[in-house]
Length: 337
Image: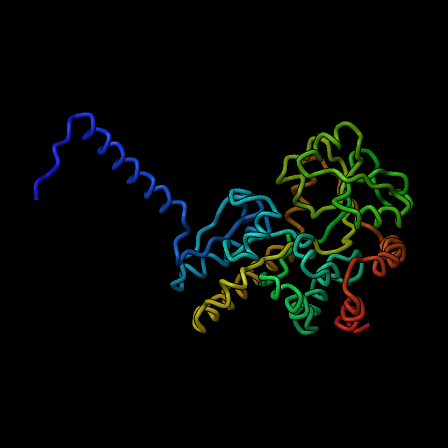
């Protein structure tokens, strides 16, 4: 067969087209996820000393890697914001994400019970409710049909307390009238029940809100101002121990159902390792409270009497929490009430 005669210009065009197609094919190949890779989307800086969610994610990934399942961590928001990651997990595009419990609650509100202020005596009681009380299984009954499996409830740090810029909270009455930064409408309701005020401020705007007086404080675990650089304007921390500050480790149900029995067991064992590592980190607040004091933040311990006042004022919130019918009764049963 006679080869067609091509002039120099035509040959150059063909060479350029060939290079273009080769480059395009490579780009597409790089953009596609590796079939065996378990992507783990992080939600915090990679701090093994302070971040409870990172400790969970890192321990989980390391266990998978050590047992033949390739896992890789992806920096916070590199795979998308909260809503995007939840959507990717539900569609099977992202295997595992450290995510906001509130976002997971849009799939099934049962999970909101884990965040009710002063509902649990301590974090151990919440763990018993999730495990022995069957509440984690109940949460998954609502989320897995929508493509999301909640692997674990993850503690970000020690139980939440009250940070303020100007007013030290030593008694229940001290918080009344202080305008607090609120995460959402649930926290707005919480502050109103306490006689305080709330204003919703996105996390990125919190430093400005605190420095300008738009907000006089916020609710968070003890490590937060240390990790996010708020120590210059936070002056007081009341160790109120109002509730566990929780997020969730979620996985794609499509991915999970596609695993072999052996791989599912590896994932289950990885979850158990990550759970224990997370709980070990948050079990003792001595070190982080010392760091707060070293940063010139006064640490205030509530007396049992004052904590009881906060608990009493929080009771109406349980009925107002946006959970499915019967979920509050199930939480009460899970803690033996």
